[in-house]
Figure: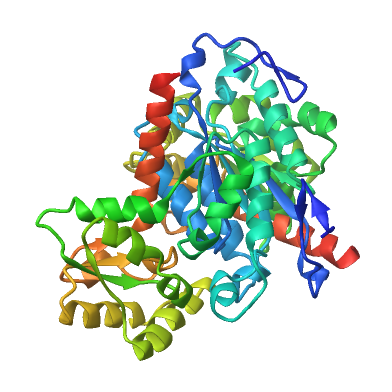
Length: 251
Length: 251
């Protein structure tokens, strides 16, 4: 930590090495999913005192236009909001950016290119995590927004990892998955809609299910399913910690 | 929202009024308490879609030196860390700052003066909340860090509100309250230490108990007590929302 930053004089710390990288979280999509990610990041960090935890800066802008509407219905492009948030994070000192929203990943290549801070890619990491599961998973079901499904965000990375993707049929996607996600975003409970959609995927042969929208883990528990439920929010939290440790070790 | 901010061009929104003030959270003291505050802020916001939630920027710096040690043992002054965080929040566009750490409030007057963004003062708001309780509370017990207790942070505001303060005796403060707070900061459970300390305060006449360290609500439930448990984190969340609504209404 340098002596003067943003006009603030810091005393030289006894061990500047205790300060690792700063994690930037581009969130608010939705806010409850960002709070869930932040809580998972804290729980996944091995620490006995406050001072051993990661420094985090969170930009939570729930006014970011709806990602699914932008992808499917010609709604407002969220890219300016995402770019602005990523710039605030970079200006605040973020060394790495995590985005706990699956659908937003459709817009991130342009954002990250303009901001110059590396991204820990949630969908890439989740696909790698799935490819490493034992016993091996050949077919995986996806519970995600219609925007994420239609944009093919998981299909691309899963194909690279050698895992086939099973999507809900159109009725289940609209009346179960999207209905449940909207309920959770409104702060209400999902009355079994996600569990029902997941069971249909398992009946069709899914050997694991991806909770592929950050609201899904808020409405579906691993116990609700006979196969592994993969939580990309948790995978992202662990990947961010691994990234921060590697960065700290190399500094 | 202006057209160009931080070099990003925004399309003019159909209703710029949907964008209210940005809430700055100076946190990380500890990180779990900040995550708890953020979750409470989201739950206390009346909203059916992401876009109705508040825009929030969180600076979570768990490396901020221990506040109790600075107050009692001549430890490193956390003021530079707090000032730096507040400047990051101001630079990121925060219109108001909330600090979900009671003990940090001992250092805030100097910080806020240097940054020029108004503070929603958690201890002031909690004292006002207590004074408004019916039936009236004449004596209130305090579960807080030894730093908060010795710095007299609650005593000052409660006296102004006409409420007398009951503090744990020295043994209960050290072996129950501080021991429990350290366990919670280390991610472990409190095996009834806080409930025991609270019961002693009630036996001595406390008609309500303040969960006066943001870790305390993580280890003590209202059901554990025969009198009201006042949670300053919840009071702060509601005060921030009221502040944001007033600011939006007047803009």
